Image (cartoon, rainbow, N blue to C red; front, side, top):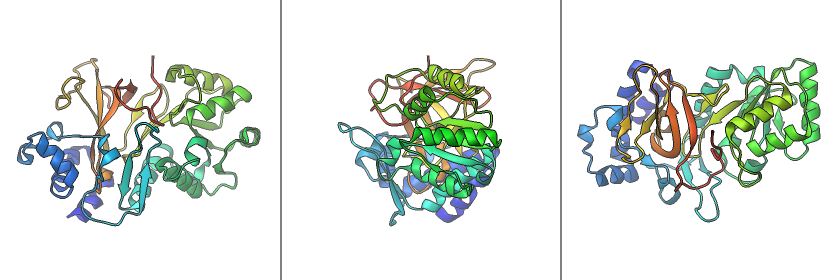
Length: 333
């Protein structure tokens, strides 16, 4: 059954999303001990779960102390979050690295086209310093798919990176610079020049390296340094196998197999419906990631978000009681 469901994930249509989500819920309730125990503790009868709003969402913190797996398997890889010394790391036990590659490759192609059309540069020093980063695996794979001679990771040699970006600008080479926030700000402070053929994508993350600033201020600084109209962003986390992307202004979109819904800040079991007309809703972000079929596809994050009627969403910050983590450490104004 799980193979049949897996085959449907990346071709799911909007009208079929709820049915596939419910099928995956029943699979995970039956074969994921942690998720089943959580659902039972809430006294939710799985037979009454008949729409997306009634699906229980597992708190993301469970990944710190439990093995959240559906079925029994030997994992291809175990991803770990950056976390902190005090709180520990989340561990995402991944059955199939190939499924993760398929998810981020299909998503990248959906939003940005084929990787082979880009020179892809990773500026992720804090992530490269540790093992088992899902972000590093994703960027490394996209670099390989790019095939461009100058695609690769750059660490502390910002001058060399600046020279490459200038050369790509002169050659009108389509370039993607994907970087952790503090490193992009370091680069922007030292080197200012037009980057009209480069897309800059920030992944979040200050990690105590700099004074916290709003996303709006950070984007303003980067745009000014490189004469850009917009800064792109990635929304992902260790516990998921899919990502959302923003083409600017902090407005994210998801691939068809990923969906954002909001829950009430005071009642975690209450889902907030989208407002009518121009009204928008704010709340805590729940993520449905159908690609996470071998773990848990229904994750209650600690992020505060706003959901717009056109399906885009914003990340406004984090709950005060949540852990400080490598991604999503910035707040909008």
